[in-house]
Every structure is written in structure tokens, then in C-alpha cells.
Amino acid sequence: MAMISMQRTFTAFQGQRRLASGPAGEVALVVKRMAPRPDEPIIIFEDGTGRSIDFDLRGGDREVLARLAKLVPPPIEETTPPSEPRGRGRPKLGVVAREVTLLPRHWEWLGAQPGGASVALRKLVDEARRASGDKDRARQARDAAYHFMSTMAGNLPQFEEASRALFADDRRRFSGLIADWPADIRDHIVKLAYSDRA
Image (cartoon, rainbow, N blue to C red; front, side):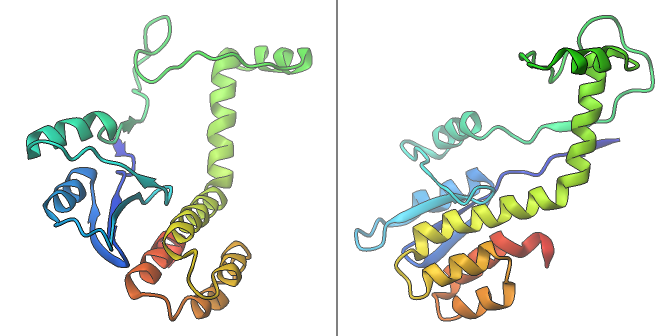
């Protein structure tokens, strides 16, 4: 059974107004068709990080989409390993060789594991990812909300207090502090910070 990893999404703002959210191509084409206004610049954010990103919007729609396909590749499909034994050597997809520095006792333990050091390390990493998955997702969501908030709301009232409440995971206080902020900005911050914990 194949599981598709989450697709990267983007959101464009013109001033304090949200223009579009979705895959890179959709957002880029909406932004490309917008009339530029010097008093309200357009900023595109990657939702997963909350950081602004620049898209090259020169040329026709096909050219823009072709450049974006290189910048933002489609999501990778993760598959469960086949039940058939595989051949010798490294698997063909997704294996990256890197250096790992461990103490001799760690190498001894890894070497004694079924399948050897590589299999044992992959299992340890997968187990750690499962164990801390919710905590990691909450931290990533908070960080993305903060990066977006810093860019779009850094000059708004109560920004410092709202930041403290966000990092303290005090959702009620946070929501109260940003209640008077422009609706599109406020709603996007809440979506980034808490959508996975609705």
C-alpha cells in the first residue's frame, strides 16, 4: 500500500489580504494575474515553514509552471517494503550514504543486530519518529506560524505577548491577543499553528 507524503502548499498575501492558497502552480498563476500595487506588495509563503519564497513569474503560464516544477517537485510516494526478498546491494530508491560517527561500543551493538548496522539505524530512526511525531509536528507548526507572524504581523499590537503565548502553547491567550488583527492574517496564523490539532 502506497502512502503519499503531504504536498507542499503555499499562500499568497497582497498587503493584509489573502489572495490564494494551494499548490505552487495555482498560487503562482493567481499572483501572476494580479495587478501590482506598490502600496500593497504581494508575498508568497510556504505553509510548511511559514517563510516567504520568491517565484519567478516571467514569461507565459507554461514557462512559470515548468520553472516551479523544478523548484517545488511533486510529493514523493513512500511505499511499504515489498514482501519479496530484494537483491544484493543497496535499494535503488531513496538511499543516501553519509558518515556517522559513533563510539566503539555503539558500533559493536549495531553490528550485533539482525540485518547489521544500517537496518538497526533505520529501525531506531523510524521508532524515534513515531514516538516524537506529534511533538515534532506541533513544534514545526508553531515555528511556521511564528515565521509568518513575524513577517506579516510584527508591527501589530500585542505581537510580543502573542509570540510568548504561541510558544507557551497557551491557545486561549494567544487567540485573545490576536483577535483584533486583520482577519486574513489572524486566520492564517491560527491555521498554521493549530490546524493539525483542531
